[in-house]
Length: 569
Ligand SMILES: Cc1cc2nc3c(=O)[nH]c(=O)nc-3n(C[C@H](O)[C@H](O)[C@H](O)COP(=O)(O)OP(=O)(O)OC[C@H]3O[C@@H](n4cnc5c(N)ncnc54)[C@H](O)[C@@H]3O)c2cc1C
Image 1 (spheres, rainbow, N blue to C red):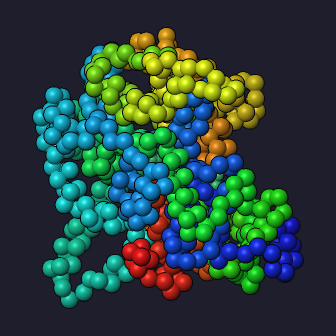
Image 2: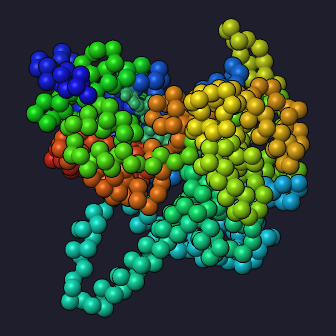
Image 3: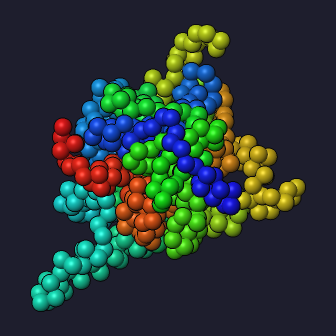
């Protein structure tokens, strides 16, 4: 820290290149923020550490040449509620969606059936009804409620979070009746937001299959059956997928950031890849430049916005000594959540499921577990004890079945050849594994163990899936590549400890408290021209474009622009 202080105070002359705004990180949120700033007429530069743009929306040839895997995000879900693709006319820049009819199927072991989430509510209800009429009625009622609140939900996602104090000011102390109604509604709301997955599932469903299907929506973002806030996530995630579908970006998720980059460039914005920001240069408590790890200093006339995780922003880019001590305390105690493990598979033939062949093979995503939440409890118990879950919960993305363009069938150049028309590309994500492995025999540092165990663990998972769910899986594998949390944390560097959310989605790390209450408005109190614009901020992880757009609203408002006018211009 002493060293950083020295260079900060020694910075005096202006750097030769200057932009109005510098955005750190070219994930989809950094790019979204940059696009709106550029739309308002500011000169904008985006800096990206990785050699290409996209962050957690990369599409790469992980297994074999010609097989294009979505490295991270695959399902276009939350983003269905975003105005960004329309406001920025992203179609013009090559962005196109595929709309699968079957969003998700949850398959149970040994031909014990499946239950599916369709784009059509009627079909979803029929699928649930086959297992429990009561559970189908329950989902119908809850989805009705979602629909009557839909506009409010969309507005809450795509606006900076409401300030809790301002919210209370609206209640007149004389209006006792109204106040008691508000208190009642607030109590219900508080309960719903804090309920665990188990509490919520038990309240609404009777069947173990349906509990597992809905429970997976919270397990998706790393919440165990007992974690606070799991119920709300099950409800919101399921309702958002029921509403907009589990869509797929044609050609790969990276086509979203590429379209954003296309828009940005059309407004004169610039992107520099392989450019890691080392620190934000401050002068009189104002940010004036960014220094890269290669020593280059680039000036920022008006502001800097960072889509890095909040820890990196406060401790590495700004420096603890430049923020209030309660901010550094808050950021130090941020909870990151469990780590992820991935298996990318190129296949030479279609999968044969033990159950629901026609439906499951045409589902955008396939969830794989026995019925009931006890299975989930064991996974999280093992994971949080530092043990590899013996029977994890794999989430399969059906990449090439949904989007055949993911496999380039005829290759030219050094990897020339032809892939069979039967070839398939899939991915299994295991959403709760420990970052540090205990029970390590030959290493003091558990994290070093991942390199040794990851292929064996991938084999164990493939064996389990083949045995109980997809008997021909092992026979059709052309190439298998496993990613441990250690691999994910390098690609991109925002994936802290191989986690996906830049801070767990817990009630006390959500809304105006995301990442922490002091930074919940995308601003840093002691440095007025540095902003947060990534998924460490409201509304959090998932491809939603909302943190980037919300941050742009705050920034442009601070600069005296009318955001609504800019959007409609
Ligand atoms: C395996 C996995 C699967 C997922 N699946 C889904 C899904 O199906 N659907 C969904 O909606 N969401 C999914 N998510 C979550 C979603 O991908 C992320 O929440 C979202 O993409 C984060 O976007 P972001 O722009 O906020 O951050 P990022 O995409 O992480 O972008 C931040 C960028 O900042 C760069 N950066 C960091 N530090 C520096 C620095 N010092 N200098 C320069 N650049 C820097 C990073 O390299 C990165 O490119 C998944 C995530 C993972 C990991």
